[in-house]
Image 1 (tube, helix red, strand yellow):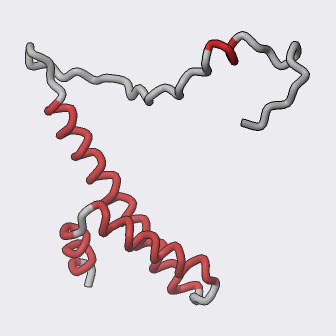
Image 2 (cartoon, rainbow, N blue to C red):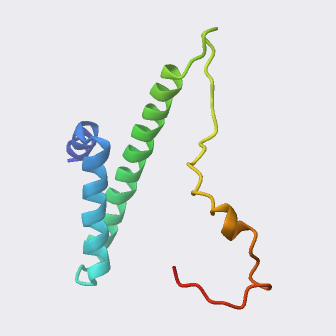
Length: 105
């Protein structure tokens, strides 16, 4: 029996493992499972977490290979989220303490 779950884990992609993990969490949170079943689900969930972590690590390695610079060395860049649009100049000059008018939009 122990080889069957491992074979299934090897076949799972990241999304499949996450879907199964979500179902396990729902079952465990339902409060309807006996303790023995909770332990089995917990063990399965922990192995699925490991599968997800491995898949993410592999994806990160692939991205690093793709992002190599011209010298062939990997360039690791910090994630820079897009900045929120700046306020118009007319609003930027107004401070809350000098403007008593309340603006909703």
